[in-house]
Image (cartoon, rainbow, N blue to C red; front, side, top):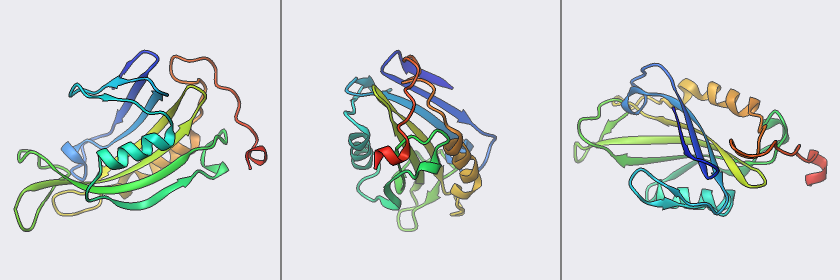
Length: 187
């Protein structure tokens, strides 16, 4: 599935086969593009705008995963071998529970005290800055209603997407991407 706002934002989600370990039984991998300082309207009508990769990380951690987040893998710079074309970037994995409607049964756990359903998110992010914006590769995994981990199920596929990602354009509607600087020149 792909949606977007030309030149500002693009979201492409690859949805896998039914798996009860994932919210609504739908495992997925996502590639997003955000242009720097260009507002994008969310489905609920709110606007999101990011000045940089670091600004995106700060806002996502604050607005999506607080107050009960756990950093599974702290924010770190990508190693040069992490991307096929050697671009710099950042990665992190965050976990956080979020309350969901009671009719959702896949990819949820019941709170032991309240009996209310929660989606225990374990989401991996890789961010790749470009000249006019940045790419975000996302793996949104969860735990199922027996507390089984969904993350390991498609972790290898996410890592393959990360290791083979090539930024051919500076955004989906942008010009051809400039070649990344040799790793030695960046340090």
